Image (tube, rainbow, N blue to C red; front, top):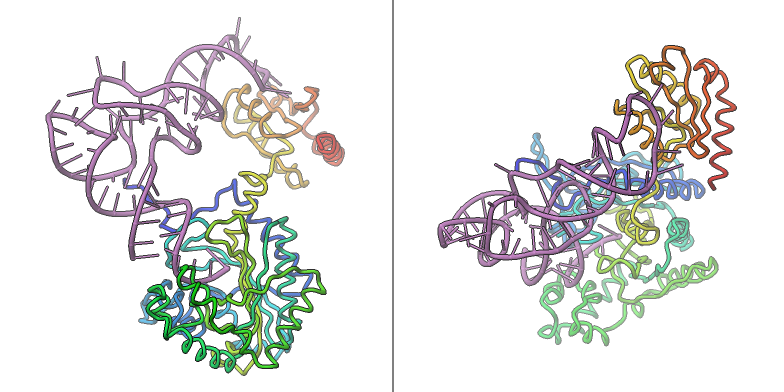
Length: 431
RNA sequence: GCGAGUGUAGCCAAGUGGUUAAGGCAGUGGUUUGUGGUACCACCAUUCGCGGGUUCGAUCCCCGUCAUUCGCCCCA
């Protein structure tokens, strides 16, 4: 009572866990770097209209999951529920397409959706994603997928399944949509409630309903793939052929329909079997209509987003509870004001020389400080008591061998190179 | 938004309608005065998520609420 806790659906990322985050970010940065993707950092909030138009009014994300509020200037503002709309807005606003006709962009950061939290699903969560804007080639679809699989592979994640589908272009979909409605309408009474609701609003989503009755009906429904134009079909075949060339395994899932309206042609998801209900680790696809929908000139694009929390869930399963934390190489114990002051100087000098130095500030008995020194994992303990401080000396205790010597602080600072050398050797022996 | 489960110290947990709420880890202080990893001793929840109700009395029963978990939905 009285204490303030993190809001529902939000979490603190604590030191035990943050190592995983840094690792994910480092690997993403490196893979993107090698593929010459540049990072962009759009704002966290935007005009509500951007998302309404970009993602689609009929989608659940826009319809009931956005954090929307009115600011003090009476503008309707929304915390981004995804990145793509903002990135595309920035692309148009800064005329990035004029500088270079193909733009490769990546991003990472928090996004917000008002949903019921559960494992792998929070209200504030984090995405890492890529957008390749300006190429209509199926090679672009494949490049983007390859970058995603590289990241996942470098993270060491296993048991992932790539599913792909084509949702065609606008006119393919209009034709298919009509056919689907025609097929489903006679069965309307047998569909689950949600699907009945979607029949006119967003019939394609009925395809991946999990309701068994609906699934049974949908079994015999016309297939979207049969309604693709020749060009769309060719595009999809090219994507498949190139994935095969790259040795990227995939499964065609003709029911894969993503919940954001802007997708065209290729849609894909990468799922894990180890995540329970929230199995999608990465999702994306082509969105050739979005740039023009948001007021830019017609520009094709593909992209995807990964859920960082879900990646980390998998990493934790894979490697045990805590991420590795940094440990000290040198642990400094001291007693008395004078010794502590000298210790500060030593610690800083050693740190500036590139060593990881932990200074025990507890003021506790030496016994306690040594105990902590031992637990810290440091190889060397520097001892500064009142007598050392008096004489300008410092004790060097090698914790593994118990070897202990003394030298003047000045000498120690003068021979940092040999000290570093010895610490490095020590670390090697420990393996 | 709907359904079900859970909620005891920093962590893992036992427990009962009735004077002092097990235990383990971690932490703190000791086992002679400035030297670690072991062992031993002591200390560490006026309190059992929060609020209300039932009761002579509730951590244990009931209601509400918040959080969390698992489904649905949706998505990353």
